[in-house]
Structures are given as C-alpha cells and as structure tokens.
Image 1 (cartoon, rainbow, N blue to C red):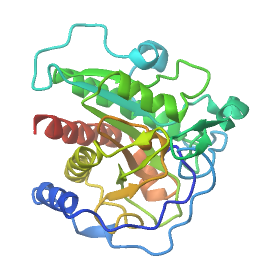
Image 2 (cartoon, rainbow, N blue to C red):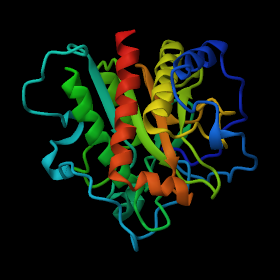
Image 3 (cartoon, rainbow, N blue to C red):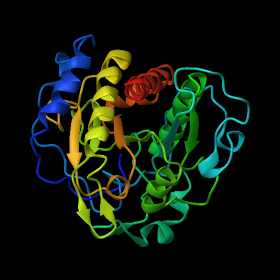
Length: 314
C-alpha cells in the first residue's frame, strides 16, 4: 500500500493517452477486461497516516507464506545503494538506472514515534511513514515488498540495469517519504517503482498502479513527469495482467488498473518518472493466497520487470 493513509481524492477521468496505452498493452494480455475485475462498489476508505492506504499490521501469527528463495535483507547490500556488487551483464537496459522502493520497513512497528513525525511533502505535511498492512494471518506488507523488490532487482540486473533500493531493512525505520523521493531524484533514475500491497475490504481484489497527478506547490512540481509516469504505469499494468493473471482492481480505477493521486508525498516530490504499484489486497483471502505464494511473487516481479523494460526501451 502507498505511504499515505489519507482517503484518495475524488476520482478523476483518466487521460485518454493513458487509457490508450494500457489498452494497447492489454490487447496481448490474456484475461484483460474479463473475470473478477468488474467495478465494485463501496471500497472501505483508508485511514489517516503517511504514504499508506490502510491500517497497521497486526503481530504475525498463524499461517506463514512460502519460502521466498531470495537472500535475506542482511545479505542484500546496504541502504539506498543496495544492489549487486558483481559486474552487470550487458543487456537492453545497460546504462539505465532503476530505483526500487520497497514500501514500509519491517521494523517501523518498533519506532512508531519516529515514523509519526511529519515531513514536508511540498503541498503540506504528512507522517514520515507507516507500518503498512498485513494479511489476516500476519504476513506483513513490509516483508512482501522486500521479497518482490529483491526478485525485481535480480531480473532487472540480468537485463543490464543499475538497480538501487531505497532501503533493504538495513535501518531502524523508514526512510521517510521525502527521503524515498529524494533517493530516486539524486540517482537521476530513469524509472522509480514503489512496491506495495493494499489493505482494503474483503471482496476488493486485484492490482492497481498509482500515477502522479499534476501538482505544483511548495517544493512539489510534477509537471515534467506526469506524462512519462503515466506511460510507465500503463506499461506495468498491461504486463502485470499478462504475467500474473491477476485482474485490474475491482474497487479503484474503473477497471483500468490505473489511479491518479495528488496526495502522495512519494510522487509529489519526485522529479523522475515514478509510480506506485498495489500488487493486491492483503485483507482479501483470495488475493492473500496469491501474495503469500512465492511462485506468484516471482510472477509479480516478472510483470513489473517486463513493464519497466518495455517503458525504458520505448
């Protein structure tokens, strides 16, 4: 889920260029436009907080997800520069930089005072971060986002990209939402993807990609990244459908898999193309079964990688 718990703004009509881009990708995506993605009514509103869309995660109990098969955070590098130390292969993404932003931090729950401190997001002030959500069985969003981010990094590096993570569970909490944006900006990233999972009502299913709205105020100005971010998001949405088999959200985005928001500091403060991806709803049992599956998480990472690659190759 994204970092801001504030209710999403009134839905705006999607730009025709975004809808067209998604439709073009979806023409080759089996299942796009069919199945359980029909528009649902009455999504549970998110609660208050920083760049996050639902409540804090309960203490992990009960069923645990399948083993990830990936290195533990402590084996994966350090901080914003956490990427592979080995030489990168030559590939279609050689010379490109991608920043992956794993939503939340597994240790945020131990630092509630710090993550509740407000930071400047250009158009106002929001909490530094939140703990994120979890499945009913206690699989934390922060664990999910790190696992998918590790898998995504491996796939992108295999294509030659230089990959940085905003964090790798190598710090006590955070980073705060303003720092997450700054890491992508300072890296001059060609694309930034913030990985999340939602925490909505049972029956609300599917993924959606959050795009930056046109925002200008204080330290925020997204005017130069709105169009490119919309292209990045549409390509990710189309490939995510095809690779995972998951349908676009039935409760946000009007079946497009795309949502535009102006209240997320991680997007407002970005000066490089950036999107958030809500990979599914952790509070719905059917979606939770996917999110806790190692094989599905690999598909999710592949869908993200394919969408990013498509965008960077043009």
